[in-house]
Image 1 (cartoon, rainbow, N blue to C red):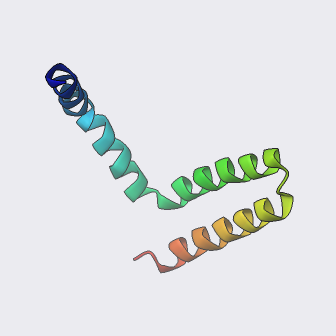
Image 2: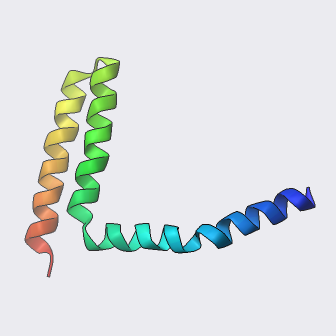
Length: 73
């Protein structure tokens, strides 16, 4: 168990910069992150046969992006 804990700790230490870079990129360009997440959700919902829900997610994501862009200082 101790070796597993050390391996996990090493993994997080080595990848901390990569995770921080992803976080900074999302903070800088939130509308793009929202659109990517929405596209994944829409594709999954369509694949599962939930077309109306996919349309709702797409419209909601678009509205969220417009709100973010409108009220960003």
